Image 1 (cartoon, rainbow, N blue to C red):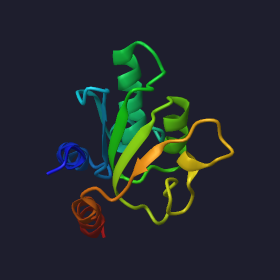
Image 2: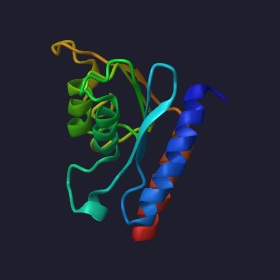
Image 3: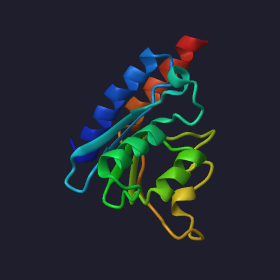
Length: 150
């Protein structure tokens, strides 16, 4: 199992905790250059009644708090679902150089499916993207969540 798969497995476990609070099961982990986890975020929109409480935003806020700076240049963000436009913008603003994600979001994805904000050459900061890590597991978790709600 690769390091990204190990991190994605951790993110999947965290996403299941979000599901337990009624939120869409998405989680993000941010690791530093040595591979140590510095922040974890889960979707908390339902829990906190905050439309911006996506897993990536929650994790970025925590990582910046831990690092004492909003410059997260030596980190990697691992997330179970392709980031949306809001989250992609936050990733760029935080200067995160690498994003690893699991499932594609064909409706709202901003890292290659609907838009490709993170690699837009018109912007001053571009991000390395590793897509589809444990994609089947990540997609199944989301599919099961929405099927249960129907």
